[in-house]
Image 1 (cartoon, rainbow, N blue to C red):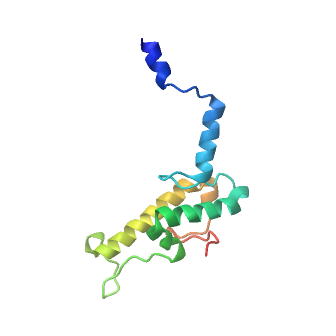
Image 2 (image 1 turned 30 degrees about the horizontal axis):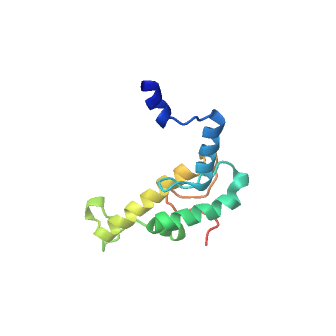
Image 3 (image 1 turned 180 degrees about the vertical axis):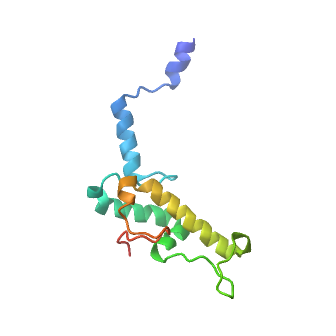
Length: 128
C-alpha cells in the first residue's frame, strides 16, 4: 500500500531535469526571485529580463535604480534617525533596501563587485 501511495505522487526527476529546471528559473526568475546574471557574457539579454521583472514586481524599488536614494534630513540638514522617518520616507527606505538585497541575489558575486555603486541601489546597469 505505501508503495502505491508513493508512486501516485512521486515524479521521476533525473539530475539533468533538475539542473535544467534550475537553469530556467535562474534565467527567467520567478515571482519571488529576479532573473540571475550568471556570467557577464549574458548581460545584454539579462538586463531586459531584469528590468521587466522589477517593473512588474517591485516598481517602487525600481525607482531606486533610476534615481539615487538619499537618506532624509531634518531642517538643520542632519540625517534623520529611522524612528523619525515619515511613512513615505520609511516606504522609500524599505524600497531601497529591497532593491539592494534583490540586486545581490540577482547578480553573481564576482560580477556584482565589478559594478560601480556607492552602497545604494543606484548602479550603472545601462537602464533608462
